[in-house]
Length: 330
Image (cartoon, rainbow, N blue to C red; front, side):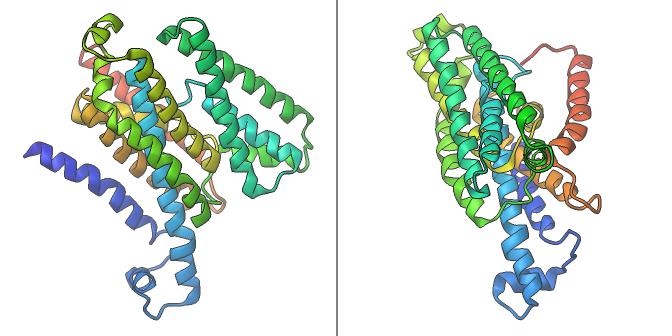
């Protein structure tokens, strides 16, 4: 009974967050306008456009981005058996950030910037996997390779920021790096969904095997699991999710670190339940944060700033609570 109620709550949380976000903003609308916009009733053109073409795609995009980052973070934490790992561990975010900055430096149109970010995010992880396979492919080598490649792309990003025009290009790069969903429209949602469906589908199909990776590698192999192939599949699927999310929303931290911890606190350590719970919590959490980012102040607060302000205390609370219970990492 308790498990059924928990499942219902995990489904209702992101759904309720999406619904509430349609009503709240600088231009308030009521139930009549929202219902009329969906049902085709007589409402003002301004309200119809605001609800269907601005708030709805932005809210759905926030949910998809949050679910993607949270799912990738949960999968990577299970893969590396490390609770401090998040979706940025393999350098995909650094590669995507460099790709977007490089595109802006070249004067590429805005609608192509996300393509550059996505491509360089995938390139970063391709280099990580290539280096790791060359030197044995162990978890430690994979993590070190991710740190090195991420640092390299961060250095390249620093070079671009140094030579960029401080009056035009540099502010655009800085704004993108802070993360925002202000430009999320139906075309961006259409780009997000296919990549995220592929990545999420692969991870959800592999989620029971992530439990096996918590064992020693030799024990997992004895159970009939091809550890190297499984590890590569999880890395590629998680990379696809992160690259798609970062390419559309910029750099948004903490979602991939906090929500898996919250999911484990609710449903336990079994990845069969942790991964879907992380998706639901990540989607609802980012929708709520996006709602706050566009409603708190007269000007929009960058999402990357807001996730840091909320994420650090939340993680500290979860960490201290775990230590107070005297338990190790489950």
